[in-house]
Length: 218
Image 1: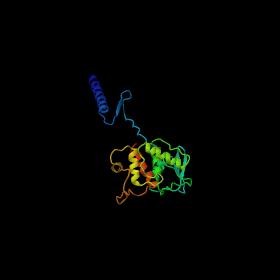
Image 2: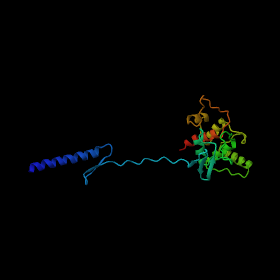
Image 3: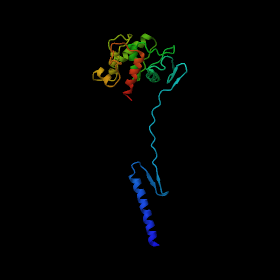
Image 4: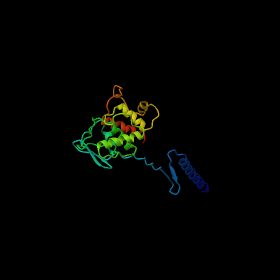
């Protein structure tokens, strides 16, 4: 009888040792609960949730309503367009806004002063103005103080080449500005590989390039 009990105890000890060894050596992190004599599955770690995107609502007629810190912005001319996501992101950040007619006017050109103004907003500075002339003067003054402004007419439409230079200056880039924007995919060519640096910058292109620029600082 004692021999049988000894055999039973020996088997039990071997089983416990096997489970313990499993718990220690298990690459998946399984553990052994001795009090309940159970092997427990490791808890699944909670994955980091992706940050929520801008609050956006769409209506059946293609109207896009973007919630910003300064209220809702209603745009009727971006739904389904190639630049839609970029415009939404930039508007949600308060860097660009729509027009009183409820449109973004994506094909309109961006002036040099507007580029200065948006770069100032990115830097945390609001360009105060009570009139158009004062706004332009303040935008130019800020850009000059920060080493961004050149001798270009601030009321003139900005070219893609100027945009490259202003972005590089705002980022304090010490290398060639064109090489920098290309290396960081801020500016890309069209399907023919053309950069069209002398072309005027549209609002849609501006929003898209700004979004790529901001992605560098995430």
